[in-house]
Image (cartoon, rainbow, N blue to C red):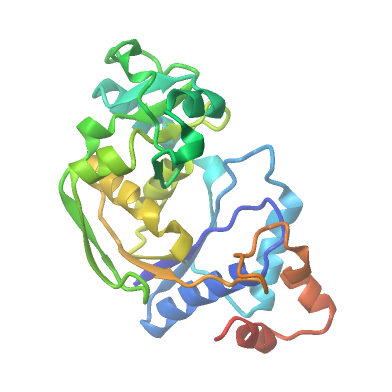
Length: 278
């Protein structure tokens, strides 16, 4: 078993991050496997070296150790671009210059309930008809969307998390109608979460993806990409989320629940395990 923890260095780790890291670490160690660390720093505007250093410090304080070198997404931009070029040459991508406002305007009466997918309002395909990509042509400097009608195939994945346990089939109709043409490269980043996480998991040999239940709906996108690119499909384990008193999941802005604050107040790693239900 090979698991991973993949935080973004855009703020302090909080209790939710601690829970995710502990689940991934404990699963791997219990199976005699490997626990890897990846830094998801493709958002260069928000990623800070001091937050990355704090991640290492907090994880070590929790008593977690990782195997091998840390993977950093900012080192992997050529790999993302090479894959995008292959998909472009296959006619599976197209350039999109729509803003969020453009998408909302293109969808009839969004205030009455526009169709929503894992990434928000399902893209109506506005830019799809602007011209087919030409094989060998350099990638345009624009957002790149995947033609889901051409990319999706019948596939499935195994889920071991408590909320969604079982085997989940994926169909082309589901992906076309309920997900739509997702963005695989943002202009300012050169990739997107969906593409990067799939390529990174394959590069690290991840066999079991552990992450929060809020990412379950994105799994169909990732499995579709894995099948499209001929990559292995890992087992998925979506765990529960750590929430505040109002029931909202914790976010980077929840500094009151930052691990550094608990540490400063004298908490121990054992205290953190108890706080997150472990």
